[in-house]
Amino acid sequence: MIDATTTRRMEEATRLTRAGKLHEAMAILQGAMPDGKSGKRGEETPDEANSAGNTFEGNTFEGSWQVVDEEVSASRPASVESGSHRTGESSAGAASSAAFGHPRRATTGAIPGSDLGLPSAWRDKWRQLREAVTQPEQARGANEAAEPGAFTVGRFTDYAGTRDYKLYLPSGYHGQALPLVVMLHGCTQNPDDFAAGTNMNRLAEEQLFCVLYPAQPMSANSSKCWNWFKAEDQQRQRGEPAIIAGMTRHVIDTYELDANRVYVAGLSAGGAMATTLAMTYPDLYAAVGVHSGLPHGVAQSLPDALGLMKGGSGPLAAASSVRGSTRVSRVPAMIFHGDRDTTVHPSNADRVAAQYAAWRAAGKTASDREGSTGVSVERGQVPDGYAYTRTSHRDANGQSCLEQWVIHGAGHAWSGGDAHGSYTDPRGPDAAKEMLRFFLSHANTVDQAGPSTA
Image (tube, rainbow, N blue to C red):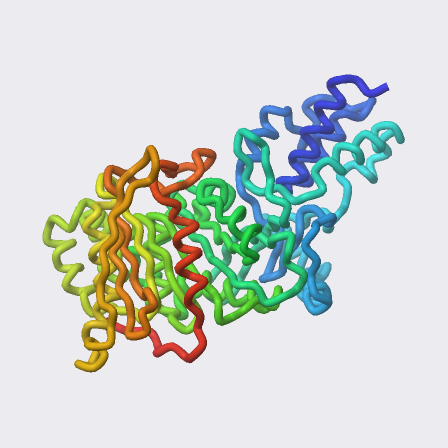
């Protein structure tokens, strides 16, 4: 007979499994054994497990990957399957990982508690609960609605460092060369939170593309901000840009995605790092979305950053603005910013736009200018929401290559986002949808010029 307490324990173990916390799930099951004792080493109470379940953990080492649940609707090509074995840990590697605080987890599809001698009735109940969550879980809101695709957990390592990530594969992915959107969260956020707030996974499911969410750990920045203001994290083949670019290429190669349709977007510090990636890796990213972000290379220290965030007042910010004026990029860009933002001053949107518009103004010939459709301004209003102004710069072919959206009345929040995520405001135009529309109109069909230098 399975009592209510045991059922609750199994439900909690199921939730932990969906979150990739297999050791914690095992501890819950061990505590449910008839001869189990509370307070056993490694056992958590449901409240403790809930707390643990809200943290982001990667389960994959040295650039390999692992799916939390094996019964996913998205299939992978044979080359991906074989690649997963090639990049898997050896027994020596597993021991090395454990020595550095990364204990080897149960293999993909393993059922925590299956080797613990649980009574058959309990194992049957466990399987029933587990079958209810065969689809990998995305960041869920209060309505507990999950997208049907696979939201996998991974860890990437190269010469520049290591970062965890989450990757969304839509259910329509069957090995074809889909586009990839790289999403960089803001300070205090994580991939699950950012996915919930932007609704990018829902759009991926509807329009068939993959979404990569790199995670910034507190060990790299106490507030989990991307270090956009550090000189060592503003250069190609160094620091965080190198890690994110390497992670992007790893995912493209592993899943055989379309290398010509790769895009990057971010919020706040993530927006600043997104524009740094556009500056340093224009050959990799076909377009960039910068939401409530800051320009590239204008800060070299935390005091610089704080001055810039407050609107550029003070000698440090003024000097850095001059220093960063020569940083330009040929990557098409979309910029969103609320004009009531008190965290990152709205003037930074103009600074970001200038870095993408400068090369076009400098490089155009007289005939280019005559053939160009130039600049257009559109004003609109979201029903029961904010008014906005969109300024579009078009090239000689009439294609939008730079769009700047000013959201009137909005603060420091992802425009049109879902309230289940932090730093979102649903009253604005849908930034994720607009960025995707802009992204998919651009592709790296020819080699981009190399990264600019100051």
